[in-house]
Image 1: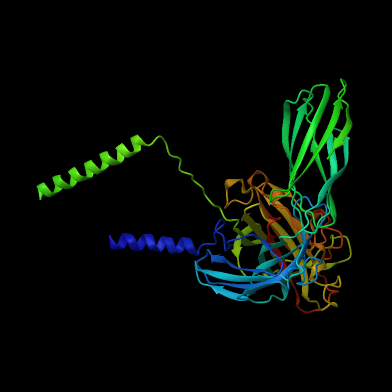
Image 2 (image 1 turned 90 degrees about the horizontal axis):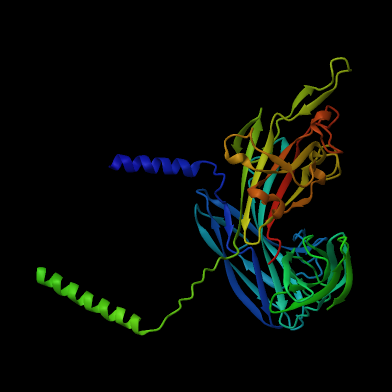
Amino acid sequence: MHRFIHIILFFFVVLLGMPGRVSAQLIIQKSVITHEIAPGSGVVDSLEVINSTNKPLGVKLYWQDFIYRPPFDKGNKEFMPSGTSDYSCSDMVTFAPNALTLPPFGEQEVKYSIKVPESFKSGCDGVLFFEMNTNVEQARIGMNFVTRIGTLFFLESTEKDKTASVKDLLLQEGTLQGVFHNQGNVVLFPQGVFFILSDDGLVEDRGEVNKLYIPPQTEADFKLGIPEKLPPGKHTVVLTFDLDGGDNVVVEADFHKNPDGALNLVATRN
Amino acid sequence: MKRLTLLTMLVAGVLLCCTSGAFAQSSSATFPISVAITNASTATFVIYQVDGGVFSPWTGTLGFNPILTLVSDPADPPMYAYLGDVYYAIDVFPYGAGALNVGVSYTDDNNPNGAINDGTGLGVHAIGSPVSNDNNRTPTNYLDDTETAIGTKAVLGNIAQTIFASDILANGQYLRFYVGLATGNPAENEPAGAIPFNPGDIPGNYTGTLTMTVAAPGP
């Protein structure tokens, strides 16, 4: 019996030692952290970092800023040195430790503290990076391979401005397109859903508009397809962008489908 | 002993009956069930060194062991280049709530030809190529994989780009990033600006850092 257990343990250890294709290496408990904070107040919280491998894992922690890049449709970002973006949180967030060594299958808590000034009436953001460096020895011609996983921070004041509007609606080649304008002072993540109603108010189709990632005072294009199956006649698109926290932007667009299939925008309402 | 067992069973039975009665008397009850999934993020990076078509797991620096090779056609004047003996495949499996995007960037660390990142270092001698890979459910067989180019194949000096989760994860695929030295071979469709190491390069150590960044698109 003992021999059997030893054999099982041996294979278990061998399997753990194999380079796994599906085993994660570093698990960050939270990929995104959001806090709504009153001016002059603060938050103290933490997140867990887990080493899911059977080897010690050295991790370096540091803060960077980021800005979303056009066309704001997939969350593409440009990472920048700490304190360099217009909406940087770098002077409001502190964290500890700055480096850690996780034992095999070990976990550790990373504490962070946020303190915003009395003048904080907008939003700010940044990213806490967890960097792993595989550098063992430098080749004569070769490169060091560095991986880093980020936890995004979004801080919003309780007195923020989330003003937004939809404009420039256009119906072209079976697609309704328009521009979402973030006129406020926080990043908005509008998630659009739409219904297409018949002239007598029945729902003919429904769908979603790709989520957008729009910095303050910035515009982003969106579009949705009008299905070909709609019968000729008058139809209305009711498009609602959910801005989270109970806020939304609703726009309606009446259009007419001719017997030959051509679509004409008749009227729009905000 | 038997009496004690009987007594215990009797008490249990009475209790069960009482409990059933209590349930029978109540009209109905709803029990809210909720499961909270944290938006954890993680990514697995698996590096393979590819030598003669054989993929071997690899850790550490990505060294290329260049070998001086005659690359000209037999009828042409002799021309030599330092060709990489190996190249690398970096498999990236990003997991997390909201799907995670992968950013790729590169910087020279040491360049005997000139200044860092001035367009004469390893950054123009090495090429990166992002593809999505289906693995074809045969993890140990690399010959039957279907790979689709995503992002831009470029010299590492110009590689800065983001690979979107929505593109990577389509149809259950994952990101594979190939890194190798330029060969100058027209059949390889190498990107503009790729220059193989050659005897004109100043001898020394050409090194750099390839960084992969994984982050959520947003909340």
